[in-house]
Image 1 (cartoon, rainbow, N blue to C red):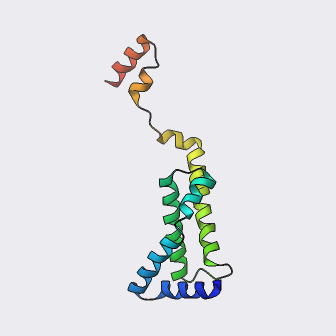
Image 2 (image 1 turned 135 degrees about the vertical axis):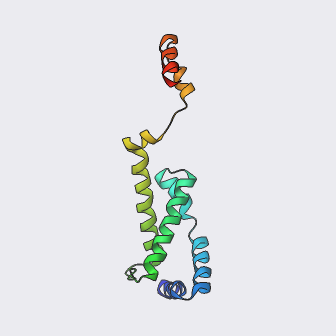
Image 3 (image 1 turned 90 degrees about the vertical axis):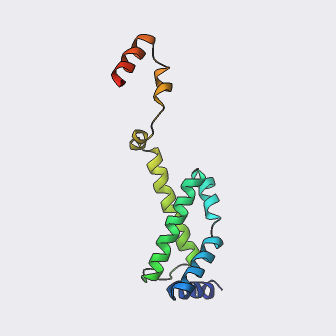
Length: 127
């Protein structure tokens, strides 16, 4: 049963523009529950999980169009593996020390934690 659905899907993605767009939209809606899986399983926020899902979907579609998908597994399994890898990449990115460099804290909040003398000196340096 999966082979028939996958064959129809693969043919739709390799078809002309109009058919491919319709198949891409159907595919997006069919597996969009992966987004909630990313939130639950990998503890990602919704935006990060959505980003991983859209990236995975684009990669899978690209691989189908360029004949890189060989069909050794069901398309759903293939898509979920790509999605899972994208989620793991995001988790690694968010937990690395490099990520803390890109997270900027509000300077007034940090200044409030300093003693008065140090706060005045830092404010003068900032100005």
